[in-house]
Amino acid sequence: MTRYILIKIGYGFLVMLGVITLVFFLFAILPSDPARMMMGQRSDIQTEEAIRKEMGLDLPKPVQFLAYLNDLSPISWHKTKDQDSFFYLNDDNYSYVKICSFPESSLVLKKPYLRRSYQSKRLVSDILAEALPKTALLALVSIFFAMIVGITIGVLSALYKDSWFDKIALFFSVLGISLPSFFAAILFAWIFAFVLADYTGLSMFGSLYSVDDYGTGIYVDLKNLILPAITLGIRPLAVVVELTKNSVLDVLSQDYIRTALAKGLAKRTIIIKHTLKNALNPVVTAISGWLASLLAGAVFVEYIFDWKGMGVVIVDGLDKYDFPVVMGSLLYVSVILVLINIITDIIYGWLDPRVTMK
Image (cartoon, helix red, strand yellow):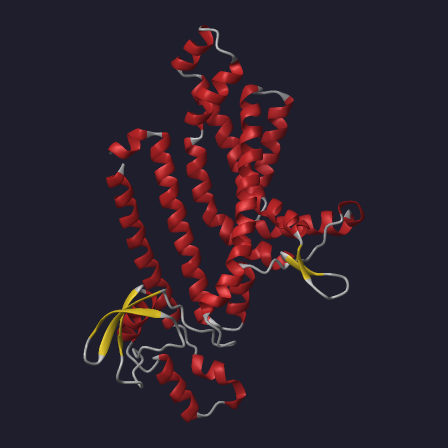
């Protein structure tokens, strides 16, 4: 099992290296001038050249890429003498611990440096640290909603196959898969926060935190989480329902289930102890695969409901050509997906030990 986990971590590291390379060169070839965007109408040639030098944009692209890797790496090399060098050890950008020192450089241990926003000059890591918890909360609630409701409906559909309940569940599953996230968000906002607002008490817009009526304080408003979470969870819910139903039907047809029934075990005991564990393997795999779509859909859902998470940050960054923020957001999302895939593989290996023997 240990070897299996180490192999998955190694694959994850290679995937992240590929993502970093793709993200850097994708934005490096764009026909834009960050120095001019930062200065706006006040720009002049001398100032723009100074900014390009400070940001390392005057360096060849391969050197810029090595500098980017150096910034992202927890263990990085920096110059300590030449203050004009782009590789100079800058205390304003990150805290660090020196591992070893050389005459004009040092090897340091630090947290990954995602650079600064072109617009606000704030550290990208600080911007994302404010937005990520909101997106994480939205995604976790959506997944929890999809798994609990989806597995329950899927098991009931399998137990009552071809009944009216099964047919209704199939209809809503197909409908849920067919609805794009942005359209579902607009539809839900219009129905439940506009047409039925007097009955639901829900708002079309609102983030995790709200200001009280007197403007004297900020409080957590979980009511604003309901519509975005349900909207985001509809598509994975539909997939979980069908996967659970098909998987439970497949397990119920196995010989050991028929043997358990012949021995007189209660059907509830067979479902909970013998069927669900074996039936949940494809469901766990599907949830990890759908998480990428979930995070992509979160961009539209957050923007429509004004849920100030990673989706709003990415859209605003693209709108303002704030590339460090967009690049940092993509890397954050990639790290999350890689970690979740590793955890999913470990859970899958625990549920089915045969996987770890391959």
